[in-house]
Each structure stands twice: as structure tokens, then as C-alpha cells.
Image 1 (cartoon, rainbow, N blue to C red):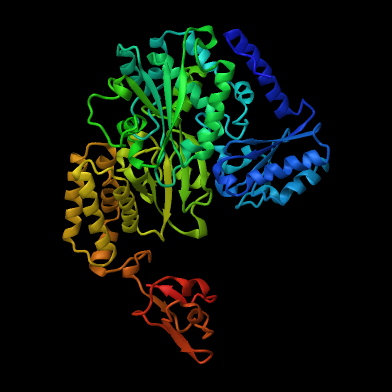
Image 2 (image 1 turned 90 degrees about the vertical axis):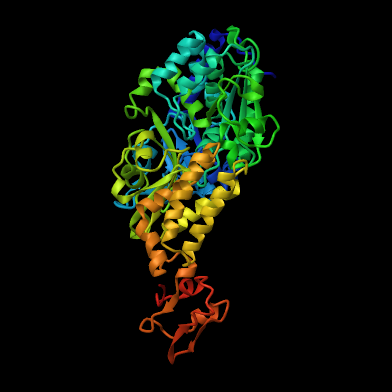
Length: 625
């Protein structure tokens, strides 16, 4: 039977009230059931969370528990290093690192036996206390979910759950206002683009509203490509309806009738859930003609990106949607004046649009209460690298780097020293331990030689070589340059050659000046943001870790033991137990000695520096110099 059309505000209010009641009963247990929520984010799915869900659902059916228990998928819980997650309501009980084999225990011991399975609970690493509720875990205490609204709470494939959680209340309010009033609300909120540049969202919308044209477009940039970044993917996977609503509000504000999602094809789960959401909304009349009887018509289209990093740049993205090669266009004219197919177009990234419904529901003033003077609201970060608590984090702007790394991230593992955190991806820069108390916002990060970017935050410890870090990002940039500008196409390649030369122990002090001069030339001569920011990792590391570069050049040493050409493997004769384990595992027979009689030695001329000897030695006798 087809879903009844929601063709008026009154019909939506009635539907929303019914859905909200069902959701409330679900979480409170008033419906007489226990509800099992299984994480359906990409990270947990890769660790068999779907198989866990299927097993739980099978057991519920086999044991005739349909009247007392129900299991469904939800979006990302964020605490990726502790996944897969299973949450049980109404107790609000969170199980982590669940395996498929634990599904039987959850049904038998918890659902039937009504006992908490303590070994599946999170254990505080400092107090060793078992923590049952998600909100009591330090990782979550300082977080505030606005862009991640509904993620880990609702089933992203069920429209009724999104409606029950407040979906389309923002659109209803927007439709009761004039277009200018909606734009003014965005201006008053202080929302800035979450894609990296931080341009005020309201100003962008104003430019497009001011254009007189029958055809206008809204484009959602879901081409998230920074290494280690997965914010937009998780938002689309966890609550696609929220992002669609944000796009619709933007469409109403500027007078657009069509919106395009541009999402990379490597995000199949996000794409699939987005398709499901679009289909459901079309079926009930919340997408299409005369939405809610308001006279506002809007349709959503989906385009898949082939994985070109440069297509994250807005004009290259527009070319790709149009079927052209993804290369940037000169600006001006800006897309708000002449964008998709030459028509006025606003381009906002996933996280930006995910904030819009909240602003419309709760008011600009409520959103503007959060954050700093020039950076309002919250920011989602993909926190990764050398940090204990890897995952998706949403915190108010102004949260310090120290709070992000230590209070939420749990600090650096294995008692290693924090060295730096890279923000802004390949286009960004790093902050050092002396900058840990920097409040995170757009202007502070730029002032420290970095940038917000889309939200990747990679922590590095004492074992990371900062010259090698710069080399890594340059390799990425060289691969992803579209080649349109000679400064970017050739200049970044020359940068990479110089940095590689330094990591191989062939560098000269003059190379440091060459890096700086060439970087400035690339930044000033490139057409788009990729080339203009490509040298940032080099300039930032060169400024803050110049001594590391000098050590590589003058002393031919990599103290982190990362640059292979500058290190040697040696065996400490006093620690060597003469067991031959290292020699037996060496792939090139570079280790010799006599079992039980003399310490083993490494022939540095033969050694390929693979590290196998360090791995297999049980006595710590092998080390790098």
C-alpha cells in the first residue's frame, strides 16, 4: 500500500506527532519492547556490524521474541576505535567491540536474562570503571551533535524516524517566511562554510538570491577527499533526510527548483541511503511539486564523483556534474552568479547543509550562542592518527586543541610524546605542542599556519618524521593535481623532488630557500584552492620544524627513524641472546652470527631496512639509528 501523501503543513504536523510519539515510546520502553540499535556506519560495517544485526534479528525470530524485542540499524556512533557498537533501549546501555559471536549472548543474557554483559561495556582506561551509558564516557562528554543530529539514534532508511526526530520542521518555518528573511536568518546565525574556506553561508545565499534568473541550482558538495576525513560520509550515512532538508531550505531561500548531490562513488553506503531517502520523500510528496501546498517545488538529483580530489573545488565540481573534465574555472564570475549550466548556483558542503535545519528550527540566536565571535556553532572532526580514541567528533567552535586530543581523544598511545596535529588535510598545516591551548576556529588556525579544512585532524607523535609528513601530502597533491596550471602541475612536482632529496640524505641547505621561493610562486600562480594551498604542509613544517630539516641535511639523520635512507639497523651485543631468530626471519640474509656462541650482527650493505628483525626480536636487542 502506497504511503499517504503529506500535502499540507497540517498533514505534516499530524504525521510528525505520530512519529515522534512512536520514537519516544521506543526509547522510553513505553511500547513494551526492548530496542537494539546496531551501528551501520562504514567503520563498523567493515567489522561485521551488519552480520551482527542479521544474527540478532534471526535470533529474535527463532526465539519468538518479536513482541518484546526489535533490532534496527542506525548511523555512526562516532567512537570508531571501539566499534562495532550495539545500544539497547530503554536502558540506554552501550556495548562496544561487539563480535558476531556476541549476538547470542546479547539475546540470551541481556534480552531474555535481563542482565548487563559487563565485559562488553566500555572500560575507562584510567579508573578501570565499566561504563554503561554513552553520555558518561569521556569521549562524548564535551561533544554536541548538531550537524550529526539523529546519527546513532534513528534508522537512516526509515523516513518516519527522521520525521519523529524533527525533520522538516525547519522547512515549515522557512516556508512561512520570505526568501530574504530566510537569508537574513542564515546571516544572523554566523554559519560559515564547513567545506574548508569558511565563507559566510548567508552571504553566499544572498548573492544567489540577488540574481534574477528563472533557473537556479543548489549543489551539495559530498566529494570529501582529504586523507583520513570521513565527516560528510558519516552524516549522509546517518541522517540523509537532514541534509536534504537543508538543501531544500537553501533552494527556497534563493529561488531554486533543483538540487544536485555530488557524492564520491567510493561512498556506496552513503549513496544508497541517500537514494532511499530521496525515493521516500518523493513518494510522500515532500519532494516534487507544490510541497506542503506552499507553491514551492523542488527536486533532488544525484551525481557520483569518480574520486578526483580536485572535484572538491566548487568550479571543478560543476564541470564534472555537467559531464566535463573536472578542472577549475576562472573566477569571477562566481558560481552564485554563473554556476551550473551558466545559471546562479550555491554550493555548500554536506556539513554546512546539515546545520541549516537546526538553525531554522531553533533560531539563528540559539546557534550563534555556540562558538567564538567569528566562528559560530559546532565543527565535526575526523580525529585519527596517533591518538587513543579515534573517531568522529563534533564540538563547539572554540574548543582547544588540547581538549580535542586529550579530553576527547584520550591522548597519545604508548606514553609517546605528542608532536603535532595536522588540520585541513593536504591543504592545511600542523599545530605543535606549544599550540595545544589554541581555541579551534577558522581565524585561529589560519593565524597558526594551518586551516580548518573540511575537518580532518591527524595526530602525530615522536615517531613521525615531519619531513616525511610533508612528503606524504605532496605525493598526494601531485597525484591529484588536474594539471591545468603549470605552477601547480610542475611546481608541486619540483617541491616533491626537493623534499624527497632531503629524506634521502642528499639535501643541501640551499634547498630550504628553494622550497620557500617555489612555494610562494605556486600559491600566487595557481587558479584554484588546490594549487593555492598545496605548499602549506611544506611551509608549515619548514617553519615549525626547521631543525628537523637541518638535521636531515647536515647530520644525515632522521631522529624519528622513518626515512630509510638515513637510518641503520643495529643489534645491541649486550642484549642479544644469540638465538638466531632475527637471522632466520631476515628476507635478504643480512644477519649473521653463531647460535649460542656469539651475538648476531647486521650487514648494513645488505640490509633493506624492512624492520622484520625488530618485529621478531623478543628481547629488544635490535634498534634503529
